[in-house]
Image 1 (cartoon, rainbow, N blue to C red):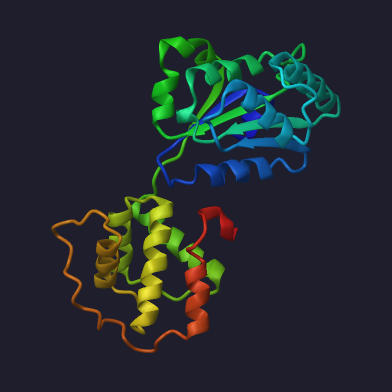
Image 2: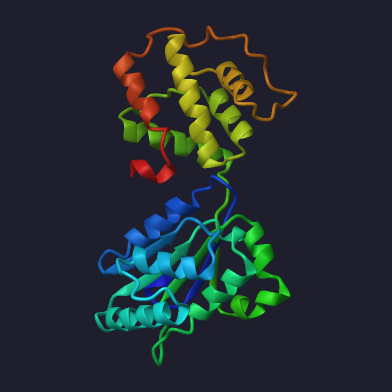
Length: 273
C-alpha cells in the first residue's frame, strides 16, 4: 500500500472482514509517508451521488468549491492537483466501505484516474471495503476500473498464536508484562473472536471489567465463556461451563491498574502504538 501510494500507481484496493484493521492499516500506511507531504481526503460515507462526492473530496482537501457543477469542480480539482504535483506532494482519496458504492459513483471514481501528468497519476485512490467489494469489482460493467487496479491488498484474521501475542502487546503498552489472561482464556478468546482484532478487544475489555468486579487476578477460561455468552457470541459444544471462577483468586488487581489495562482494549488496534 505504501509503495502503491508513494509511487503514484493510481488505484489500490484493500479488502477484509469487518474488524480486521483495514482503517488502522490505511492510517498507518499514510502516516508512514510523512517524509513526503501527503494530502488525504477520507470519504467515510460511500452513499453519495457524484456531485456530493466531488464536493466532499474538494472540501476535505481544504478547498472551497467554486462551482456546484461537475465540470467546474473537476477543473478546480485538476488545477489544484497539478500544483501539488509540481510541489512534489502526494494526493490520496480513500473511500471506506467501498462495497456500498453505487455503479454510477464507481464509474465517476474511475474517471478521476484520468487526471494525470505525462507519466504519473495526479490522484491516488484507495478503495477499502469488505470482501463483497472484490465481487463487485469483478462485475463486467466495471472491467475498465478493474484493469486500472495496481495493487490488491487483503487483511486476514489473526491466528491463535498471533492472538496471544496481540493481547500481550496491548497489555505491555498499558504497562504490564504479567499474564493477566490464562492460557485457556487466550485460547477461548481466539475461538470466540475467530481472530478478529475488534472482537478480541471487545471480549478482553468485558472480561477485565468482570474480573475486576469479582476481584480475579488472572482471567480464567470460564470467565471468557461467560462474557462470550453475555455478548451472544457463537458457543462451542466443547467449551467448559462457567463454573470455576475460583482459579487465580489471589492478589486482586488494584483499581487503578485494572483501569489502565481495560483502556488498552477499548480502542481500535492501532490506537496504542
